[in-house]
Image (cartoon, rainbow, N blue to C red):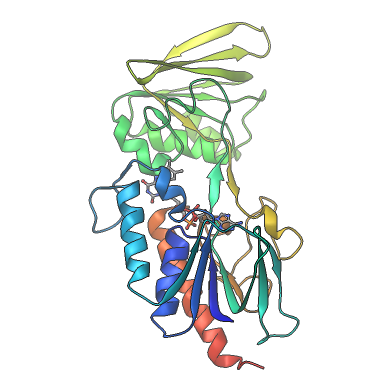
Length: 310
Ligand code: FAD
């Protein structure tokens, strides 16, 4: 039986495993793919004290740091069921897709999230070559350039406002007849001189030349006409999907599927904690996930010293 079992091997899970192991308690980490979203990232410029690194390099450093401690690393293992303890202090059970079952007195859920993709030609091909998903991360790479933001919900409109202060020009494309963002954000966006807003626009293709994004095509859903916009960057902002489908029904989730946590990373189940992009924590970033994972492990430790094993 583990004292702390971490599910997920991204920044949140790695931090949780390190903080738990440093308390000298039996710690395990099961991850479908160690590294998480960081494995898919090129340049990282906002990990404080590290002015520049790259995803694979950061993943290797996280793994090396976890391995400094006595942590049972179970990589390439997908959890598919959480069975909460019947009573606080008793063990929770996590079932893995391979049929194995792990027991733990506390669990830290850190299964992260994935950006919803458009699924149009060119999107995957030009990912990290002009197609981006995170304005806080990649906005400065497009300084003075022309970009599109796809999606007129809160995250899309916030991204467009943010980017308008950095890039040369922003075109916001919304699929519906109207943007869905809060009115105050829409008003702010409309007040910006270097922003065009196109509604009823269905993006059909990201175009490229010389290995980089050159523009995008969209269909006007009212007239059926196709238009081309020349630009250097496309920010896709149509939703961040938490990897929590496997928890459905077992734990309280928000309407967006995020694990509901409080400021101590407690979930609706005593002894089960959660951290990072899979949760309701605002702002999904590496440095935030690391902090959240650390907090979750400290809360788990606190739980353990207050609830002795039965
Ligand atoms: P994740 O990194 O998503 O890790 C989740 C972990 O859980 C993975 O190991 C995964 O395999 C595992 N997992 C999922 N489901 C299961 C399951 N059922 N069972 C077992 N394991 C499971 N942030 C920045 O701060 N700076 C940047 O420059 C930056 N650039 C980015 C660029 C891209 C292309 C992307 C996609 C994201 C970027 N981000 C950036 C965001 C950042 O990567 C995330 O905020 C961060 O990785 C979240 O950490 P996490 O540990 O919560 O989740």
